[in-house]
Image 1 (spheres, rainbow, N blue to C red):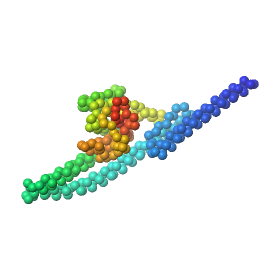
Image 2 (cartoon, rainbow, N blue to C red):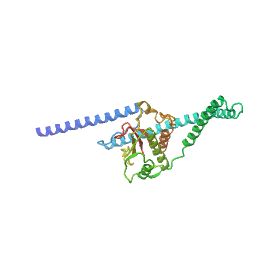
Image 3 (cartoon, rainbow, N blue to C red):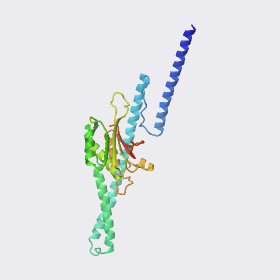
Image 4 (cartoon, one colour):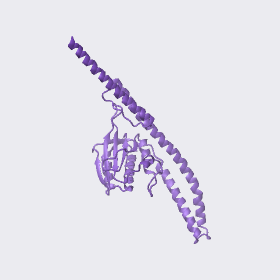
Length: 292
């Protein structure tokens, strides 16, 4: 009888400890979700292991909901920038057109030719022309067509980039049979933009790795994540938030278009382009192409 009581007592203690531990894990998950909502960061993926079937299903649903909210927020942000950019480019064209026209007319006048006034007017004309050309080129480049998704072999595309940019030292950790669901032209343009960005930052090497994110839904395959790192100039902390804002650049010759356009193309394909919180070993900057 005493032995039976001891066994029952041990079982009850183990059961209570298990329940307390389980509740602690649930409270921790709830805290992570509350912090994510408060900070408007929906990139979290809570673990679904060691949960009861019903709890696991709920956790997977919450993970998928967080991912859907994140994608919608990114889409809304890009659409807002697109609307603002359209307004700005329209106003810039309206402002520069008469300046270009008037300065061109003044340069053709006989009493202006060969005078100091000609140099000043020519500077105004050249500046307005360059600004108009920049806006026109941005309009053409930013008018993206709807992506055509297909199965794209990633490794051959990366090998092609290696041959194109032979001045860089490449380290590629990507399986030869890796297939992505993407628009081939857009994906190539995104990768080229990131490589050009690295070269402009005086990088000498590129490291590319492929990882699989844990899927929020076990019925769907895990999304692939591409990490692209370089040893170029580090990005200052104060510039990280503005890195993908259209026209933002810290380079003298930069236009501030490449990264913002690349993020737009990623979002149109159902993915995202971000700056990694932690760099790849030996790299000063690492970009993340996620949910491909």
